Length: 252
Ligand code: PEP
Image (tube, rainbow, N blue to C red; front, side, top):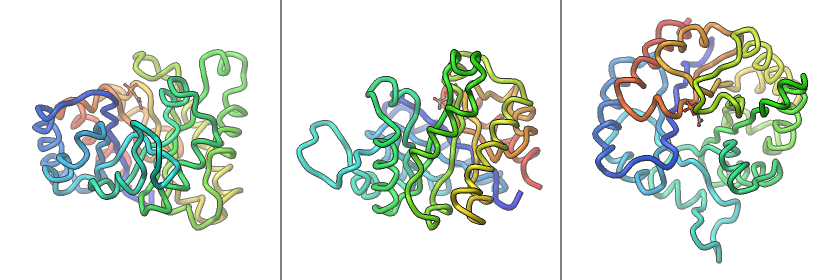
């Protein structure tokens, strides 16, 4: 593949300053494994400290508000994230869509605000178990992606897509390698149709119960350019196993 594999840890609502030791250890490991691009999205409260502790890895947020600022108690703008040292932001995670009722239009607005503020974006899409069982997974994911992608072809080098089946997140269950490959191929086609040649280089990550034990197999699926990792990114030891698998499988 043209670009380095991209392995992103999403710490969700986990971590106080005591977790910075894990971030430091992940950063040190990334220095030895430069074939892989490594990133961490800690909670907002740790973005600045993680940026200060880590020299090599990218640091990002897990969400941003679409507005630049204003009367939005408890929210964080993309510019604030950037000011805290973030280089990217995750938008459209299924936990945000479910817990905060975020629509595709909301996700698109957040992605556009992030890009305008100078951040890269990891845009999450994924079907529910009922949708997969009904044979609608590709249709659902295609609609999510079409409706949440920011406007304009120039966004291609700012966006990474993360395919995360909702039923695979935190459950220990994953689609088959064939299913992962089929979905990634379908996402690639949509990206190429929408973004032209730039769409061919957008990285597509798989997310959902990735761990050191299954990472190499998942990285063998078609069009998989890395992983968005939740639980297994909380310790340097388990995250490192995934980074090593990426270095071995996806480098060529
Ligand atoms: C996630 O929440 O983005 C995720 C993939 O979680 P987990 O790896 O724990 O399934």
